[in-house]
Length: 96
Image (cartoon, rainbow, N blue to C red; front, top):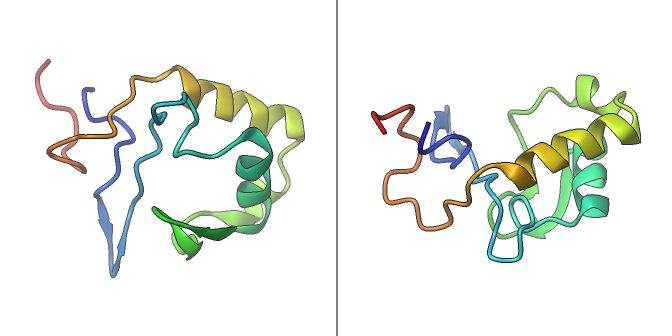
């Protein structure tokens, strides 16, 4: 899954963001604290990839997760391969 979580998928008028780690190893460029706040509220500080609100996430589900659960998701995202320069975002599962 070379392009796993690299964004570019369309959900109506919205485009999914790249969640892979940036050059500093931060998923989507977010610190753990920013990630937890985002997952609880759906709001960002106008993040370059996400904008001010993430429209297509199931916020009622994520909002109720514990800090420990959200930290586990964050650590998973930190562990996947970084693809900040993915030439084909949104393509799912090409042959590796």
